[in-house]
Image 1 (spheres, rainbow, N blue to C red):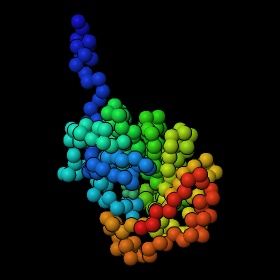
Image 2 (cartoon, protein in one colour):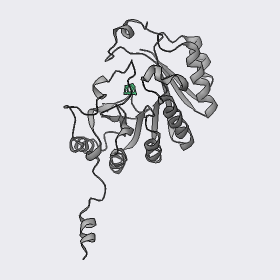
Image 3 (cartoon, helix red, strand yellow):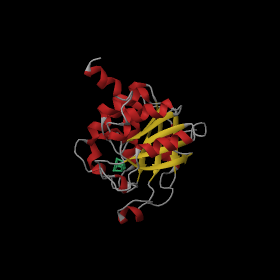
Image 4 (tube, rainbow, N blue to C red):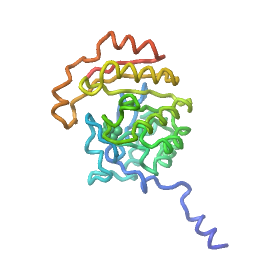
Length: 249
Ligand code: SF4
């Protein structure tokens, strides 16, 4: 028996996702993170963008002392077999993690449907995992040429546009969604986003009002009246999609 064969025989059948999947939090049961399914939500640690309204700022650093081991996550999923329908990878930004494909496979091997929440930060890695997904939700933060004003990062709009096109081309069930704060996004900007999505064939879109929970800048907390997405705007946008929803704060 060659040394090479010994090495490969000892190698795990599947790479351990713990190596490259940093988990910053876990919700054991959610009814709102995967449409129509009971889901566990795995919050991946780390995001290179800095959206002013981010309500998970503790997930932005690449490392956290509160990180969970994949072993603990895996154990919870094992216990929830038959009780949950789905696992959602959220963040932070899950596609930053090279362990994401292995973690998705592990969840699917346990019989769960798998969803992904992404901002489209890493289009190449998103492309690689799309065939493994049952559902994907992507944030559309602004008209693509205006992304840096929201994310603080040059070139972010190009990455998001590429990711959006890949999701539509993949045929995977999707939702695009935009967080609306009246100080950050005008009515015209929302209509611009909706037109672009419609033009490229998006079927499902949601507008979600800014929520102050977890958000850091005080100016944003005080600047958004409740129910600030009006019915006329919702009606106009709604007519462009098969499925459309407004989520009030
Ligand atoms: S992309 Fe998402 S996780 Fe990253 S800063 Fe923006 S809202 Fe927060």
